[in-house]
Picture (cartoon, rainbow, N blue to C red):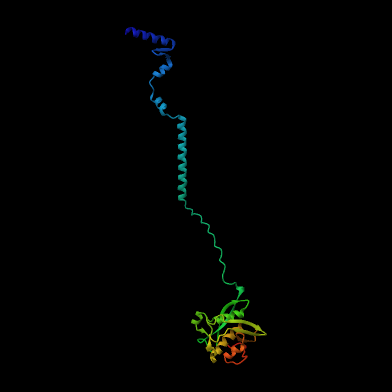
Length: 253
């Protein structure tokens, strides 16, 4: 044993002299052997197992600071917007286009007067009273007679206006034209619709309404001749006037 120790000591001494240490497996570099034999420090072990380079750590720290700064700025901007007292801008509202007026233009119509009896205002046999009606400006005479044959409106009837004409006589005008100063009015057969118009008072009231309306619409006309289906004798015989009975001038209103 003593001899073995002496030999080992001599070998170590010889190894130190030439920079090597002898072992059973051969010789190794003294510096490398010393480094291997040195106990590892905790710091070195930590870096070897999972450490991060200092530059990487600094880069990550800077990235974190930038992210935090962006978040803070965004929060401040949202807070400023929420606390703003300025009213929101008014939304743009498109103005609707004006709707086309379904009624005829003023120059296409003209106002005429149609005449009805009213026993609350005067003699029901002879007195008639005007009511306004808008008609086609191109032919006010025809428009006035058509409006007369339609009769009074419900509101006018409630006020006492009446006579022989109503919705039953509406549309019974054939033609109306001025010939040599005389208005020729051709009507459908009114006899079965208003048979009592042939009485003395009835015929007077019928002619008062017709004459006043026609002569007011046909300015300058001298008189009116009425026909039923193109025959004037039929109309006047129905009213017991005799042949060619023509109402001349304007009936007293």
